[in-house]
Structure formats: C-alpha cells, structure tokens
Image (tube, rainbow, N blue to C red):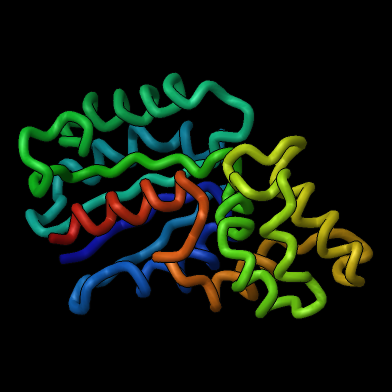
Length: 203
C-alpha cells in the first residue's frame, strides 16, 4: 500500500515525515506533497484529484490535511468532500466499508501547532527549557481549543525561554518537536482523529 499526503505548507511536510512512520504499519510507503498555503492547496485540489482518479492504483490512498484556522470546520470539511466526490473518488465519510475508501480528509484544529501542544513531552525534549508543567496550565489542557492561535502560542512559549527571539521558524520547530512525538499519547483530539483514520485506511 502507498499513501499520497497533500498538505498546505512545508512545515506540515516536515512534521509528517517524522510522525507518519510511527503510525503506519510496516510495508506502507508514503509521499508528502506540500503547497504554498491553504488557498494554493484548495485551488489546485479539484484538478489534482481528477488527475489521481485517472491512474490511481487500487492499493493507493490519498490523505488531505489542512489547518482549520478560524473557519467553520463542517464547511471546510464539506469543501474537501465535494472535491473528492466530484473527482469520482470515495472518501471515508461516504464509503460503505471502512476499508474501501480512497480519500481521507482531515483538519488540524485550529492549526498544526496544536498537535505539538498535544505532546508536551516531545516539546520539552526538543526544547528542555520548556517546562513539563506547561501541560497542567488550563489554557493548554485542550490543545484544539487554545485561544489566540496555536502558532502564536508556541512562539510565545518558546521565546519566553530564549528561543526564536527573531521569530519562530515553523519548519525548524516542526522538525525538532515531531522527532520525539509519540502518537498514542497525544492529547489533541484532531490528531487522534487523524491517527485513527490512517490506522483504518491501512488495515
């Protein structure tokens, strides 16, 4: 089996390069295709999916991952579902059997950085001056509900302990944190939905 990941930016590509092998069973290959932001991905998605439809092997799957940001999650998910349906592809939401879908649409809520807050141990391993007590702070207990933007929150916490004084490098942080992430312990609900979808896809 092979999985094609479509993501909105290079930082997501870097993170998934480290995270995905920890989730997939042995023998499943994958490739990650980053875009230049959400508008770029959404704009190219209909044509790209129609292209896949013409040649997609039976044992290939497609995963689309984008940040929810501040958009309506149902509306955004619906847009992804329509793009797949219009291309003639079967999504997890429309498949009659859990093992027969071709496309998995997933949102990082609100942003990919919420997944990093979901694993404070990995954040501490990458940046030891980040206290493990961060996970006990009320505003970080539910990573998908961090107010004011998870990217901004991550930058703020890292700068407090002396990192990225000139501004957070999303790619560097994604690489450093994701290396130590343990999928099973992640406290982000949207991450666990993503993980569970991959497990069902590769049964």
